[in-house]
Length: 218
Image 1 (cartoon, rainbow, N blue to C red):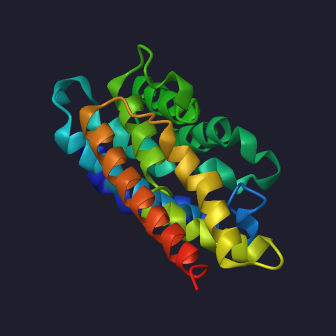
Image 2 (cartoon, rainbow, N blue to C red):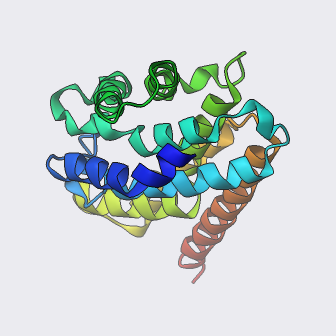
């Protein structure tokens, strides 16, 4: 962890500067809201720490590599025209940075592999490194649950005309609620965090739906 402790702030500054220099949402709809990919990165890092803290086999994880990969995982969104390949692009950015800092070559390969593969969420239950599982889960846990519902409102208001309470409800059902029905987590901690977020989202939407129905009970 000596390298990470020495360069953590520098890595965060580097990633922030690269992302801030471009439209960084990576999603045409999110371009219409003030979505910060760097703030997303900071939240994913916190989720990574929570998942790691509860992971039972910490000896199987290279925490320094995982931490570096988490900081760089979405830097590829700075290439707006090729945002769908952001994972591969981000691995290239990270490799250049680590090589410049003379990080061990074999560890560079591992870190960059984590970044390059982190978007392949369908592989989360395959025989992949635990480090990659945690990175994937941390990424999935952001922008979902309560935060996902807020984003549903934000996007509906920013992207659609004639927004109503009912159209916002439909957006929530179409995006956050539907997304949370397919539980993608692999670790026990990840499953618990996901279930907590899912319950909160479903309870809110059910209450919201009921409030709207009451308006027709005159």
